Length: 187
Length: 308
Image (cartoon, rainbow over all chains, first blue to last red; front, side, top):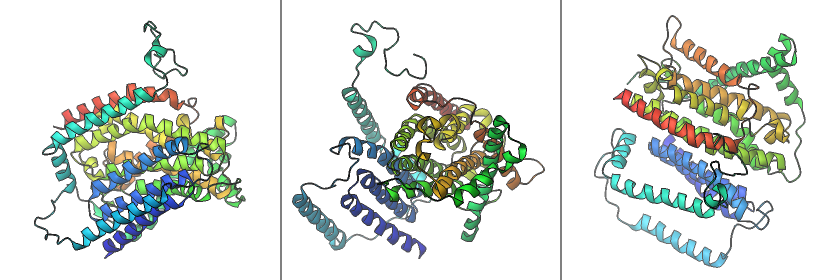
């Protein structure tokens, strides 16, 4: 009973916060409305007794939106998004695409004759998740993680305004990098 | 699996009161330290948190032009809420409010909430100093969060469980604080950092006219100031099952031992204020990533070796 109420309240909050992302006129509010929507999804997972997944969704999404808000304000606005601005563009196309996708997914969810549940959930879902990630899905993890990591490093190298020649000199001859702000470990 | 009984939901009403009492003790310690430096008498020192509370609760709230009130209220009201949520998974003796099977991750998720709250507290008032302080906190967060995550992983690995009661009872022989000193040290340091306190008070420091406190007044200001002590108190409580053997100890009961240990940790956290200059996030980033992160990973290997 309480589980059902929690699920429906969280579901409504998730959708309402998701709508607010596009209705608001502030990048900060849009980012944190999205965070609130994801937190509600995390709560729904908790209501399904998926403890680890629910908590990790909340953790990751709040962290991500806290950082994303900075980038949104920095890059998305005319005058770094400190003034009110619209969150939508290409309105007509977006509305049509959104409506078609929603109707399609909703129709699929309602019309597909879903099979009855065959097995039972594992006693310790966190452990079985860990077993899957570190066991049968290890190959996927081993492939995806280096690619993601390389993407981050690549983006940083490309995006960083100072390269190693500026830090260490044209022939990389300096012992200590010439940085505007010295690092904390005294290099 | 150790036996802990989950309390009936209405006991939850006591959680904020208990945490507030602990936080008041912490605030009194910090107040006493400040008062002693200023040369005020012991009576002034002990009553500073109370007189400040009385003063701020009567003060009229002042709101700057074009403040984002919604997000600002979320931030100042969220601090005490997150502190209480952080503390409810801590077992007190044989009882616990929320017996979460992933208590360690829950604590981690709540400390990440503080990323959002400190930044929102900076964004809300539409003030330059506050906004800079909020941004600066996120810079610090990027430096301490990953070492903290690995520091939290070590006890969980050694105990083979993410449940705080299991972690506490896995320390029958030796406290994790003793053979995981790096993890414990990083935990304490991060607790000071995510509470924006002492040498890590980047979100609310006088060098930026008070940072997120620059425009807060009245009850808002009280919520931020008290919220900071509440978060410190919650972090001190969580440290007890995580590193200090939970309620284990001679003569006194487990509840008393949990509170005594939490008070000692809280004293360490609170009295870190005023002992070092503020650590600049841009310089601490290198320390976090080059020193603390490898150190905590090694600590994790030691924990894994000791556990198997």
